[in-house]
Image 1 (cartoon, rainbow, N blue to C red):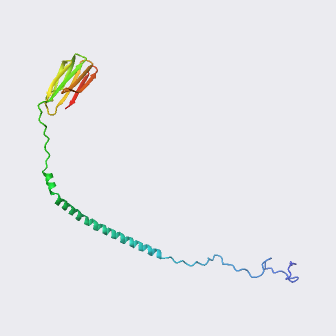
Image 2: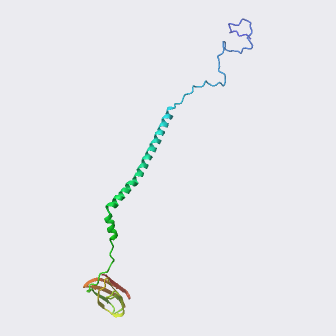
Length: 207
């Protein structure tokens, strides 16, 4: 069938069967082959100067450490010589003090002799009961003495001439109340009271 709208086609000429209908006229556009890679970029050269600077810094650090260790070794080696000189000077200056220390002796502890007067001691025990079960006290030689079934009130006077006097009295009543007292050279040193069935009381004085 003839296209009546084509002015270039002669009248009555058939269209070319190999040319597709409506194909564009003229030369086709050049196309890039499929799968072709773009051209490579030029390689940039790496700078070497930072590595050179780093190597120089490491060398300087090693030199500094070696120098400081050498200085410490010299100082530690010289120290014993100074200490030895100081000891020699100290020994040369203070020999008399050392001799005095060796010759000094501590005197032994010797108790003082008895004065002969002694301490005037009075023991007193009172109770609500007429009798006491027992009374224990230290005598003039600081020895323990005991009396049983004694009448109340009870008392004892003595003179203790010992260097280290022990003064004390203990009493037990047959009643419910008991009191003891220690008088040394006219002054009351201790006084105690105990209550209860068969109560026990104790007095002490440090001389």
